[in-house]
Image: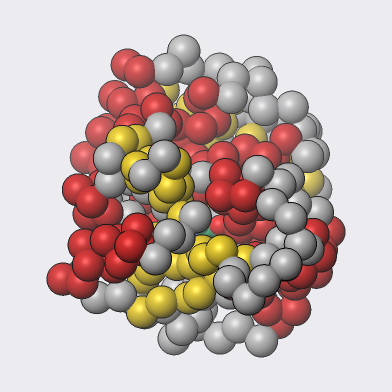
Length: 287
Ligand code: NDP
């Protein structure tokens, strides 16, 4: 896309509710400015019953694409024309892309996590203990498996949800995937090289997850998907146990960068987007 030569920007944005706490627009518009892309990112409050109209409206206005966040990640599938392979496996979409008059649904949450982990550790060959079985955990599990993790254990308070993801990943990807019982403290299986908190524990007003680090691999890396606050009690405890840690900002940043590339074809400058994200997170209060 060329720099602005007229007064008509390309449009992108997000549909969710509540939308007010979504900091993604700051990152996107910083990248658009930096790369001279004549586009805007509009953060839109969209109620569940209005989602179909919003998607048709975006098509009518020629949007390049949109993100959808809670509560639309699953229901938006009914309003799209096709799904990318990993979005089909995950069963949820966080990024829709308009190509040749058709909407394709992508899921870049898990891809964002994998890109963030890849910056510090080769994902191929990892043996991962994944805590949680909600939407984020499902996306992370599928993308880790597709990126070459060889073994994934899913550990979740509600065991049925863990079993569903384990069956999906074990049956549809090359990775081995099984369920481990939820326990306090969480026991890290022998040989695990990566531990990921993909639960919502760590958000303000929630608790944390105790982990027994005795006997774990010295190289075990401990990751959290929560971007705000980035330095969770889960990560602090891991550092106290001598473990390398990775916070949830990289996942947020990388999924946004992937979305922007899908819409515009430009691979954006992560430093520019990261600086805008950090500034937005500093002023971002959870509802
Ligand atoms: P969901 O509501 O789909 O899932 C929540 C998960 O947390 C479930 O596994 C749930 O277990 C578990 N959980 C919640 N409360 C407790 C508790 N008291 N004790 C034990 N387990 C609990 O949420 P999402 O998957 O959409 O989001 C999870 C986290 O991921 C959020 O913190 C969100 O901020 C983060 N996220 C980060 C992104 C990023 O870009 N960095 C992108 C998307 C999400 P159960 O099944 O038993 O209820």
